[in-house]
Image (cartoon, rainbow, N blue to C red; front, top):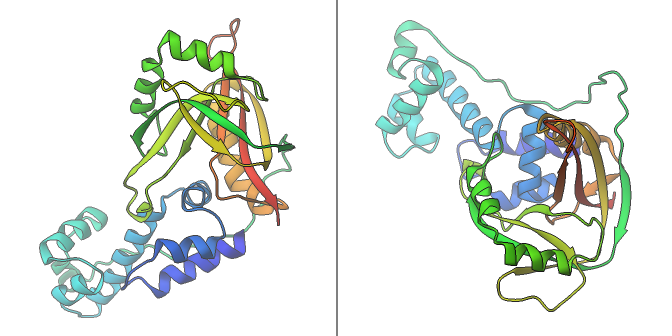
Length: 287
């Protein structure tokens, strides 16, 4: 995985002045676009779109310092107008492109390089589960992609579930885990700009085929799943587990992510306020 990430970085460097293809980046990374974006974010602390923008503006800053015309640099790095480039450059650096050569001030954003850092040998609990094909049934909604904080559209989705829908979901539930799960899929391909929508579903797992029209049914093929249990203050513990999966476990594991969605569930502790048990299920295959 680390090798693939560094190949992506080199590919980006070679195409900063041209089109960056989502298909090519996904192929180089060897995982789906959504999962690659998560791995990149957890390892680097910055989104892929932000990284590409910062590298382009950093290279633009170097060329401006060397005397290149603002108009030429703006067009070279994909901006349609000088005004648009100037606004982006000022927001990034704190000064206008025209000031670079006059003042000799330059800002840089170095190219990333991914490497493993040992952080104290903390054990990460997980189990591998082979699960036959099943259906995910529940209530879904298109929501904006959001990688930090609480997605209010998902909150609204949860609040919209009726008693009748909830009753049917419980009656259909017949395969592990026997919990209400959250899953996201059908992500828009334009992930380089950190924009777009995905479908988020709140539901249950079942092998039953007959489902009423009040619920959506999504068929899931047979997969091997890596399951990560976690317990502690919510949502910090769950968020830390997600971060560790993508930043520590996946880059060094004997497994890689399958091009399919993951799901999770959370059970709040009734006796400890703000305390919960969660599991994250991620489809994987042996490398």
